[in-house]
Image (cartoon, rainbow, N blue to C red; front, side, top):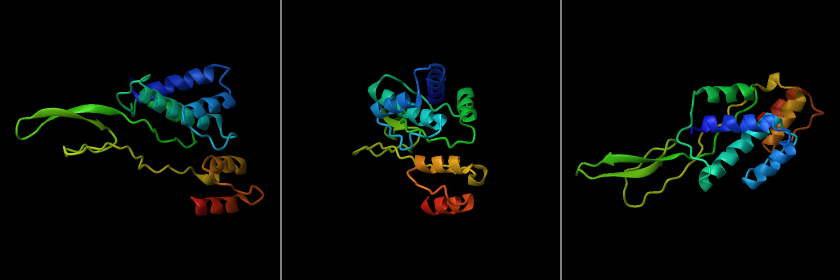
Amino acid sequence: MNYADLKWSIIQEWNSDAKFSNEYLIEMGVEAGVEIKNVRADRKSIIAKISDGVISAGVESGEYEVDSMGEGSDNDLNFKRYMGDLTIPAPSVNIEHEHEHEHDDGTVHSHPHSHDEEHSHDHEEEVYTYEDEEEEELPDFKKMTKKVLDDWALERGIELDRRQTKANMIKELNKKL
């Protein structure tokens, strides 16, 4: 299954089941190793972050098998529409495949590699790591209310003073980013 399909199915389940309150989801996140710093965050942000953590933990444990990211698929677009103006967290799941190749001497073998990194043909000691190098795309702060701006900042561990003007809050936020 691809990542986008899995994530969208989880989001639909969580939004349709009344037992999945924000508090319950945050507890699920803790079990999956995901920390939500701002428990007052928007439900969509909580769901997006925790579902990614649950998928990553599921891939590591073998519960889920993810063969591609599903970028541009219907469910990838569904997720982006669902998130709307909110920031979409970058996925932390690492998808590895065996990559078969042939060398000049005719030897054919395979190595695990991730779609997110370049494959090395160095056969001495291969180390595969995943580093998320994508920077988060910043929303248009001017279109946000002071409360939404404050909540967005808190999700990232930045405290703002809502007693300030929105313009000053934005200046302070930009300094801390």
